Image (cartoon, rainbow, N blue to C red; front, side, top):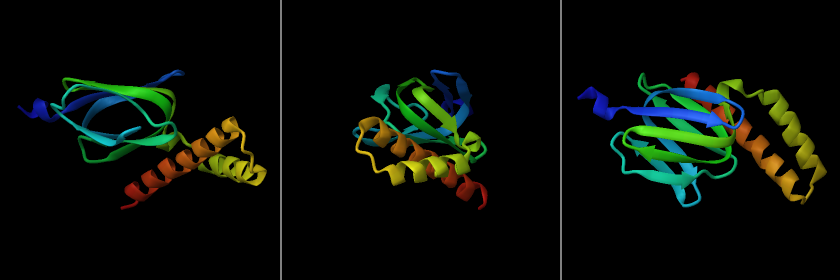
Length: 138
């Protein structure tokens, strides 16, 4: 019966498979708002908000954060598949590099759509990496 409370989660990007494993829950941002997924959830297919955080609560209670930039996720049974255009595990984010990119983009003050998207990506990377440091230091 314990299996009924477990999600099998896979997170992949266009470049590589980032993470797969079992989890208690997952929280993702969709255009309609945040959605929390627990075991035995109804089937879902939803877009991910560009430049957002994905939160996975692992079975041991630890939190895994992922910065996702575009894509979608599906839930079927207790299987959750996250397919992102670009994704990074929080632990892999170079925070200093993201801060430098953010400072550079803010200084440019461009209204170009691609520059605005890059600015949002840098902000998300910093936020996701910061959440993990906060959670792991408790």
